[in-house]
Image (tube, rainbow, N blue to C red; front, side):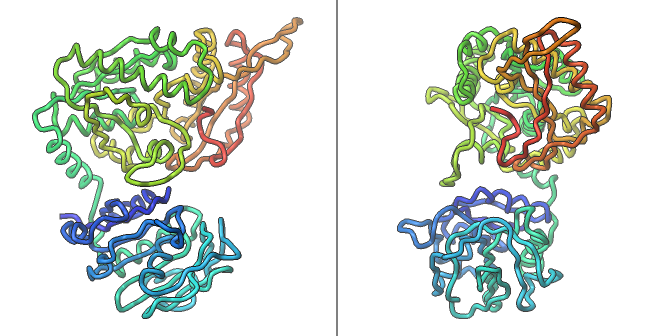
Length: 512
């Protein structure tokens, strides 16, 4: 049985990042609500507990608190940011609002030797995000590190194996952050580090079988990485009890539907139904310009089409989705997590109350790179596993403003040229995403000896690891020039191509 380290979720957007770091160390992590009873954690055999950060102040009335009995389980505890403040306050220390808040990069100075800082430099750059700070240590604790504005940025009670960090070691911006987490797992919790993606498959297959029993499942197959991996995982669990439905919503890329039919016919033994519903979607989107309204409209119709297909297939009890963690953290709070809404995703928002299908989301704790690893473990072909992400609403969120058939045609032709050139230059699998955006802007140009007043296409090409952050890809000028020239010369109605050089944050990868 895999060892378990519990992450208690106090509302941080980084909670699942913590869990992911643990899995990268090959230690099985499980996220629990902040108020999960200690008896439940004990029954699950947790080897250690991590208290996540969160947006609340421990000084606020009604601030989330854990079951105090977790401190009597005899297992190591690590508090991060809000978690450190909880650890300090609940065990007898004192927390006060800080006159000098710390947000962003800071410097941690390690004061003394500690198993938590084994192999860590005496001075490292760390990422802070807090307004309160610990001003008095609880009994039995000592300081092991400090930052510019916090004398107790790292604390420990070696006897009880309790530790606290005011900064976020789980984020990429914190130097040696993963090493610190690894020290907690192996030097303090005594974990073996023997959990693998094969374990994830084994656990997930068993969960799916228990949940589904002898019932039937329907899954929306887009041809993308997430839905394909979800389909392969569920297929391994229940086989022919799964039916996959590919919805052609009229918002797909050039030749997409035909490519999906061919791909799954050659590589998978799946029940596949193709629902051609383009006219329904485009008619409903007529005159809709607001990005959220587009997503909600598409999400609603997506379910409508599914209900129609369910009626044709027969009795179906479950709807499976390839929802991954970035979809959730950008869309809706889960398990009491008060993370702010960034944008709606069609597969996690707008589900009508009348929908009678139970939802299965076997990937919703994984980031994109982990989904790819899972796909490889399941034996999926490279063309599927390393396919660039494509949004559920399709080209609807890449045509800015009003969606018309003419605008979609223009975008499809431009996008096909971009992808053709990116693949020919061997950059398709090196960048995270590369796509075109149709802008509702017309500009003056000259073609031949004639004045033109035509459309603008933006190129969006980014590098990323997990879609939580991204930066624009610095591709060779010759390649960008070739793409621009081809689009302007070959796509009727386009006379200007621009390049998006914004990062995420503050921008998102998609424009809508």
